Image (cartoon, rainbow, N blue to C red; front, side):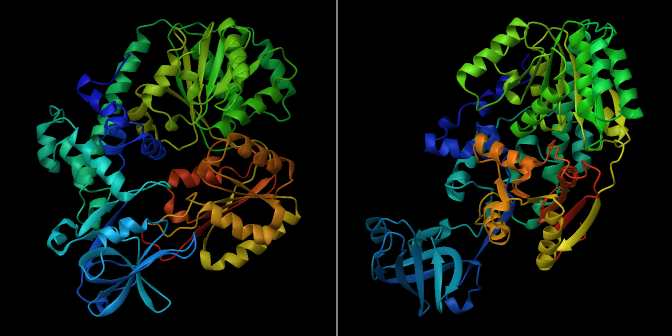
Length: 598
C-alpha cells in the first residue's frame, strides 16, 4: 500500500535526473541523505557562512571569509607531487598567496592570468608570516563581484563532495517542489504566521541570520507540524488496515518458553513477567496485536521479545526481528543462539555482507519454514525475503525506522502480530500521539545486581585526568568506549574525529585500542568487536554506530567527546552501553567550553 501522492513522485526519482550529477557524485550524496531529490530538500544547512568585503588585507581577520580585489603577480607551480601550487597576488599592497592542492596549472593560469585584476573569496589564513587563502571558493572578474554572495548556507558534507556542488543540487531539487493544496487549518496558519509547506522548506535553505537555525523559527515549526500531522494520518491508515484483518490467535502450552526461562543464567524481573503475560494475552486474541515495549537501556527488553517469540514458534509460526544496525543484529543473533542452544529452534541472520550461497540458503530456509527465527536490518522487508508462516514481527529501537518501513515488514505475513521496542523514554501522552491506541508495556526494574551508572560532566582541559582514570580501569580488566561525533576531519566543524582521536590514544595505549565507525567494512567491525569482547583490546574509539543494543558486561566506562554536539536521546542511548554487569559503571560527558544555557 503506497502512502505517497502521485504529485510527489518526481521528488522521489533518481538523483541522476539532476543536471551535472554523475554516478560518482550520486554515490557521495547518497552517503549523507536519501537517494532522491526530496532527500536533498530535507538535507538542511547547519551553519551560515558570511563574507566580508575588504579592500586591504590589513583589515582581514584570521579564519574569516573575505571578498578581496587582488592583482596577480606570479605563479609558483609545485615542485613535488604532494606540494601545493601557489599564486602570488597583491591585495591593497600586501602580498597574498592563493594555495591549491592537486591543481592543474593550465586551469589556474587561465582563471588567474599574471598582471590581471581579480576578485577572490575564501577563508583567510596566516602561515609563515604570509597571508594565505587555501582553495578560494570564488575567483571572478571585478565586473562580476556581485555574483559572490555575502552569505551562504553551510551543509554537512562527506569526503569528496563540495559545498558548491551540493548547494547546486539542492537548488535544483527545491525547484521541483510542487505547490500542494493547503491542508492545515487557516486559523492556525494565521495565528502562527506560517508560510506554506513549500515556502517554509525553501526558506530553511535560504537563511540570512543565525536565528533562522533556531528550532523555534517559524519555518521549522511549520515543517515539524506537517511531519507530525502526516505521521498521524499514516498511522491512522495503517491501524485502520490492521484492524480490518482478524489476527492470528497465538496459543501454545509454552513448554519451550518455560524451558528456556529455567535455563537462563539470571532471574527475570517482575516487570518482564508482567510484560510477557500482557503480550501473550494480546496475541491469543483474535485482534491483530500491535504492542509497544518500553524500557530503559539494559532493562531486558530483548529477553522479553525472545520469550514472546518462543510462544509464537511453539504455536507453529515464524518470527522476525529487525534491528537498526548490523552490529546490533549480529549481537541479537549471537544472544539468541546462546539462549536457544538446548532447543531445536533454528535462527538465521540476514546480513548485508554474507556470501550469496549463505544468503540463498537462509532465504530458502525462511520460505520453507525450516528456519523459525530470522534477524536482520532493513534487508528483512526487501523483495525476495518470503516467509512460510510469519506470526510475529519484533522491531528493535523502533524510532530508527519510519512508519512505512515498519508496515512493509509487518505485511510480509498475513495478519502478523507486531511488537515494537524502544529505550527512548516516551511519556504516555506522546506515546498516544505517536502510536494511537497501541498497548504499552513498561520495564521499570533493572536486572538483579545492576548498579546505577555514575555520570560526570568534564571539560576537555582535563584530558590527562581522563587518561589516568582509563589506565586504572584497564588494570582492573574493565573496558572503555570513547565516542566522537565525526569520522573524518570537517572543513566546517572544529570537532575531534574518531580517526584523529584513535591515533592520539594509540600513542598512549598501543595495541590495546580499536577503531569502529560506519565506513569500515562489516568484517573489520566484527573483528574489532570480537577482540573487545575477548579482552584482546580494552578501548574502542567509535562513532554512534555503537549507540544501540551493544551488550558487553565488561564495558564499564563510556567517554563521549564533544557531548554538547549530541542530542539527549543519543546521550541516553550511549550511556546505556555500559552498566551491563555487576561493576559500577561511569559515563563521562566531555565538553568543549563555553557552554550555552541550553
